Image 1 (tube, rainbow, N blue to C red):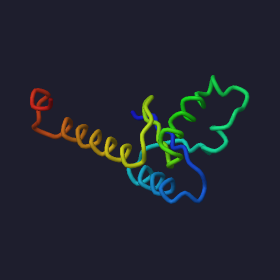
Image 2: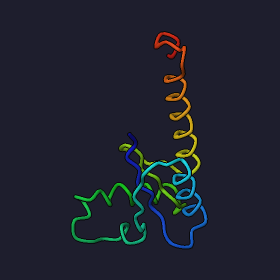
Image 3: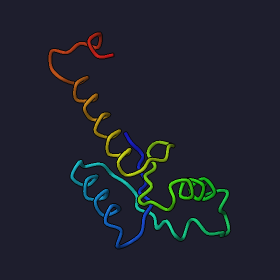
Image 4: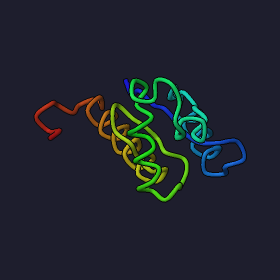
Length: 103
């Protein structure tokens, strides 16, 4: 099971697209308002906002930032990795395919 958080803001077309694609894939996710998390606030170390601020800065503010199972991704990276993971899972579960054939 993937743990997914989409960090973005309302009106962001790529953020909306990411949410729509995740909905179509039936993957649960949480949406968080990025601008509120990348400014100093109480608990910024505990809620990992520091890491999110660094990631946002490295990506030059490009949104959304998608967190999957402990790793930050850009929109395109996230969609690619999700698709690959789903394809691998489908192949692994395919009838007539043994575990030895999937590596």
